[in-house]
Length: 94
Image (cartoon, rainbow, N blue to C red; front, side, top):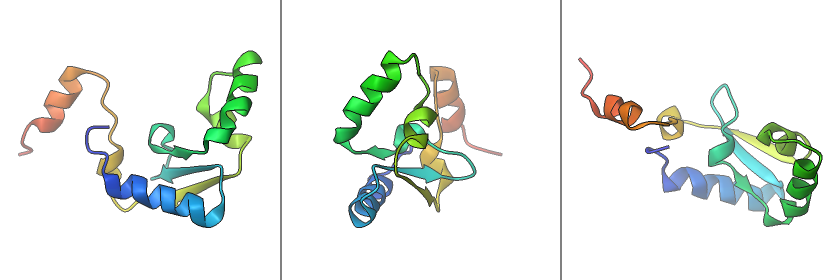
């Protein structure tokens, strides 16, 4: 997520404090688990899910008090997995 902005994380953390939610994640038509804010006291729940063979973040979110926040800038959530993908994003658009 090379375009992830501190403003987004600050907003998610603020909403977590305001709502008491265990997880606050950005949503732009899909959940963005890597950009979410998680309470550290979820560690035991994560451990239990992993021990049960669960490996999907969705399982943690579904078993938590989760709040989804619609984002105003989806570019912040752009996922990049390779150098080629990052280079392609850096290319000027015609």
